[in-house]
Length: 124
Image (cartoon, rainbow, N blue to C red; front, side, top):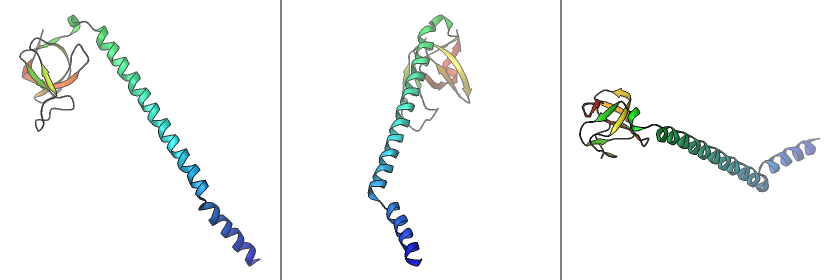
C-alpha cells in the first residue's frame, strides 16, 4: 500500500516536472502572446485607418479655429520639460478638442492631435 502511494506521488511529481510538458506549455504561451499581439496590431491599424479617413474627409472650411502665430506643439501632453514635437504654421486651421489649463488640445486637418498654448488659438 505504501509503495503504491509512493509510486503515485513519484509519478505525479515526474509528470509535473516533465521537460516535454513544460516545453509544450511554453510553446502554447508564446503562441497566445503572438496571437494577442496580432490582435492588438490589427485593432491599432483599424483605429488609425478610421481616424485617418475622418480627418481626410473633413475639409479645412469645417475647422472652427486657427493658429495665430507659428506655435510649438506637444502630442502627449503640455510638458515643458522636453523639446516640442513640432511646430504649426500661422493660419493653420484647427478644431478645439478640449481646454487643458493654459494649453488647448487641438486637431489639425491632417489628423494631428496636439497641445498648443491657448493664446495661440483664435476663432476663424
